[in-house]
Amino acid sequence: MSTTVPRSASARVSRFGTTRVLAWGHGLGVRIPLTLAREAGLEHGTSVDLLLQGGRVLIEPLPQAPTLERLLDGLPVTLWSRWTPGRGDVVSVKTASASRRTALVLSPAAYSARTGLVTVCSIEQEARVRPFGVELPPGFPVQGVVLADRVMAVDVRSGGVRLLCVAPEEVVTAVLERLTPLLGALPAE
Image 1 (cartoon, rainbow, N blue to C red):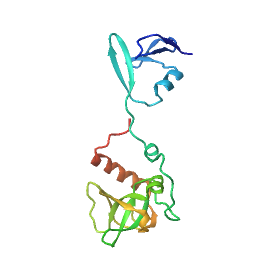
Image 2 (cartoon, rainbow, N blue to C red; image 1 turned 60 degrees about the vertical axis):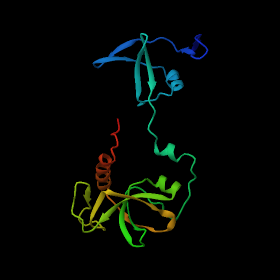
Image 3 (cartoon, one colour; image 1 turned 30 degrees about the horizontal axis):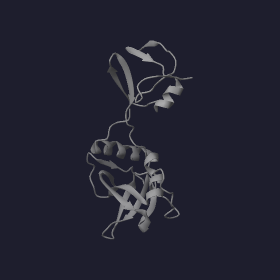
Image 4 (cartoon, rainbow, N blue to C red; image 1 turned 90 degrees about the vertical axis):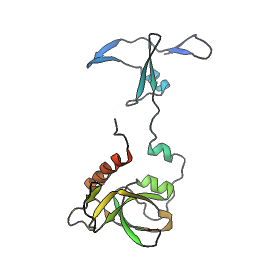
């Protein structure tokens, strides 16, 4: 149970009990009571800033990177067709010039269902394997190289996206591994 310690009107402090500083690896650790963690917006895996102010240690949660769920929150799910493209689908897409191109879907089905768009990488049949290319396995229904550096958004609502097959998980993983450094994304902690 917390008690409120009077401070200035602008900075109220709540006391959540007493704990001990314990050895933890090559440092020290403090166990934070669950009620305090919840009230402070902390959960397992939250990144925090450690500050020293007037001899007091302050812990401040860092802004969290947006998740797909948070970004899509509030957008209605709309079925644009009988099938919703999702990560790993190999599709035929209609381009702006009305020609068709084979591509690998990178965005999850939840994104497609709410936005009517898919994010894809081109698959080229005649391309040689380059640093950003991932070759499709022999015997796969579609042959060629997925080009992780050829990303585009396609509108599903136009009806120009057709499912051809589903790529092996190792192909999808390899494409995402090549795309991540290209975009400068930070690795997950």
